[in-house]
Image (cartoon, rainbow, N blue to C red; front, side, top):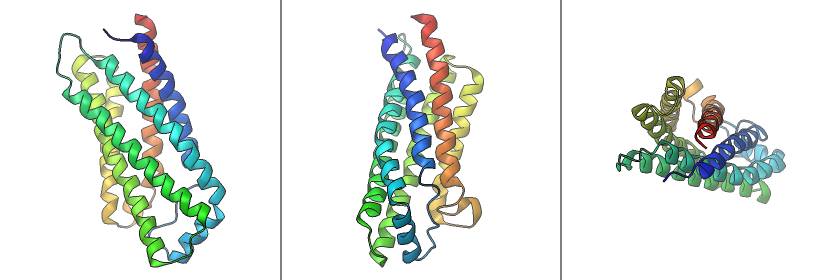
Length: 220
């Protein structure tokens, strides 16, 4: 039997988690381009040490709330007459991997800022490793968004526009992983996509949480 109270708390969690995640991304601002010298990157870490530490601290509850939203969302989408839970399990797994990579990435960034590492090739490599984990994390989020949108569409559980929004997030997040190959502008490894992708993903969580809350309230 579906737990409507759990699903309602998951909706509230999604709203809070999305807000915290956006704040954690805005506070330190965009990271320096990966093509910058080690000295310039180290300078950014030093000058933004407090902001990076706060962002790292906020990320932990943010991803925890969003994970709870993911679990509650798929519980709501569950069809009691259909035992096939493969897509839902895949979606939750994507959310878990995204959360894990995000926490590791911000932990590395926060630790580097607090410690005040000197510019060196090793430091630059760690910075790139941090960015790569962040990028691949949204590849996992793409799986989460796709599973949610597709499951919702198949079951007619959410509005069509919200399903379309989920597919857009899936496409944007998947394209964001291509920045690993580098390139100018949008597809630079720390280009505009580094800010747009998480903001769009958080907006989808926020909107989906509000819709989920409205749907659950009708059935309680």
